Amino acid sequence: MNYHIDSHCPDCFQPSRPAVCAACGFDRAAYLSNEAATHHLPLFTQLKKSEKGDTSYILGRMLGEGGFAIVYAALREQDGLSFAVKEYYPETLANRGLDNCTVQPKRSESERLQLWQKRFQQEAEHLRRCQDYPPISGVVRFADLIKQHNTTYLVMERLQGNNLQAYLKTPKTAEWIIAWLKPLLETLVQLHNRQLFHRDISPNNIFLTEHSHPILMDFGLAREGIRDNEQKSSAIGGGTTGFRAPEQLRHAADSRIDGKTDFYAIGGVIYAALHGNPPPDADLRLKNGAPLNHYDNNAGLGAELAKLAEHCLQLDRSKRPEQVAMLKNLYPLLWQIDRLEKIQDETLVPTSASQSMLAIPINPAQPNTAKAKPQVDFQAEMAVKVKQNSKQQQLRLHDPIPNSKRYIYAFGLFLILVGLAVGLVYISKLDPPQPSPETQLQQAKTLLEGEDHSQWPTAVARLTTLADTGNAEAMRLLGFSYYNGVGVGKDLTLGCRWYQQAAKGNNQEAKEFYAKAKKCH
Image 1 (cartoon, helix red, strand yellow):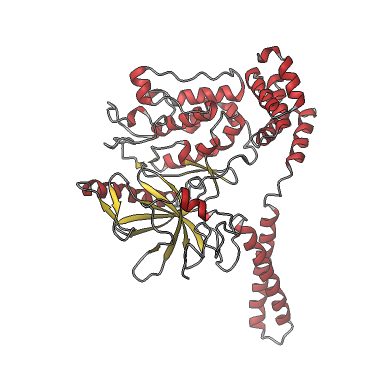
Image 2 (cartoon, rainbow, N blue to C red):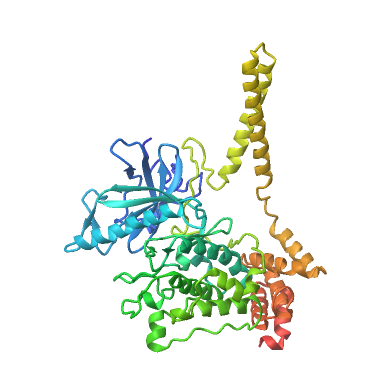
């Protein structure tokens, strides 16, 4: 099929002539005006796995870019699956050729361009190792490696959701943080067990899917351990400012890299979620003694998380935790709370950099259904086929068939029925539709007013989700909960803050309380 900007959407690849795609809502005109750049590959560039063209990808819009790579939406032509393709393109070292595709080194940068390209290719190997049995579910899945245009392309799954950084505009509650922190730590356990150290964990490299599951991304700085379980940091340094450990600094006296390096970054991520901003960079802390901000609440889950963050952010590597099992023993309160409901923040509008990656079938002749769960459609289709095959098998059993074949047909029918049963069980376990905000608010009120105190944390979690959407009544109830210690640790500062937000949202009861509450002034 021939794709063109005037006839196809560069995000979902559906036929679409209007500026705003009718299938996925992507604004093509706004993208071309505000985000597309001359150093990006031309829209609908084709990548081929080999000269035979047995596997090829069509590249669409830019999803995000950094100093060393650009990520594009992509469609695999052979089966219509959607992916994300990451192109090695260090803008400080290279330019585009005359064909607008080939990557050419700048003057005197050829050697460095090739050196870092080898490191870029190592990311594919690290991701491939994460898929060895048993696969690590908390790591972005790798699909293919392509060398073309004098550079390298990594083909990965395309996820739906946002990176963690998009949510950290304001401090978050402990319950919200724990919801993604615990599975993230389990992913870290599996990586370290395989002697893989990420070295660049930060909110930008943690992706929260639409089901609130954290996915680690960008393994460009990842390294494998060696026999003594330690490794020297590379000469180019590494890590993100605020989240990099002291041993990752260029001038570090002790540049050993191991699991403790990742734990320092985890501490920085927790700190950023609690305070709404990253911790001071390790360089500033070492040279100028820049202090960490103090967490206001001295009790409850928030205080436990603050202690955990401070423990991980120790400049002295010998004082940092070595294993997640150690954290479970030191901070048991954090592991006593079950994983909460789906993280939602409807006030966030996904940016081009955060709309990323899951392989979803796309039929160019039909509207895009990428937002729906592909498994649901698959199971429904299979159920219909199973019923049709079942009727055909029953008709055949009444025909004059030799006994030898009769047993074969009966066994086939048995397998079909088993498949149908498995499909029905799977469908029954799918997430039910979410109730309306009004219903969720009423449910949370009922739980808070009930005598079953074990349900209070669940109510607070639901109110937090609603408050993030701008629901003033939910903000008022959160203020009541924190101010009085209902369902959470008593926190007057956070309680007053929620009452103030509710008052700004024109909640009359919150206005009256905030005006009279002396402890809030």
